[in-house]
Length: 113
Length: 115
Image (tube, rainbow over the protein chains, first blue to last red):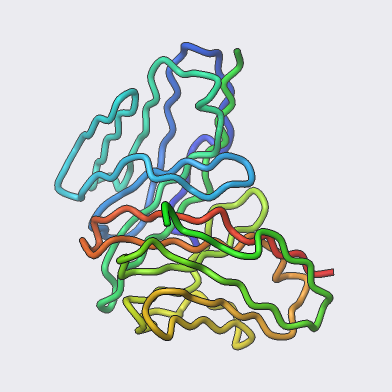
């Protein structure tokens, strides 16, 4: 079963606009990670935010984490056609001594040129 | 190698056949994960290894699924008596010894189609 719920399920915007994707989760976490997946490929790690952090930046990416609301958001600024992909949030935790990374259902992002 | 390698890239099996999917993680990566991804869905956790020890197999859907990593490097996911509902992409990922705050590095997956 999947921990995270992502919103929206699909997002289509014009090139140059900003894209915001949201993720909510249910249990305690050590970190929250965002991954990107192009069609027919594996997932690529984008950014990790620890549970004691509130905001993190990496290039055109900005991630926020609100542990009181159990939610996170990923903002991609100045979007490009090459950003078209599916984006997944994943919660990381140690459960019974084992690492566990649980993914959400993903947001399909389409950037129109 | 540069990244996680999975083989075969595509596998077609007739219902009832056994299949074996291979994963070569990044050299030196202690942790190895298997995920199952249905079309249009997020990856679902199957099992986790730390070196050769299988610490969590709670996600394996039935006793037809079996994973091993005998020498703590290459891993094999075996599915016995395949069923149509086993059709999916099977993703392998590894991470460095930095523990829970290490990102996962994924292979491109094996797409299994059971006919």
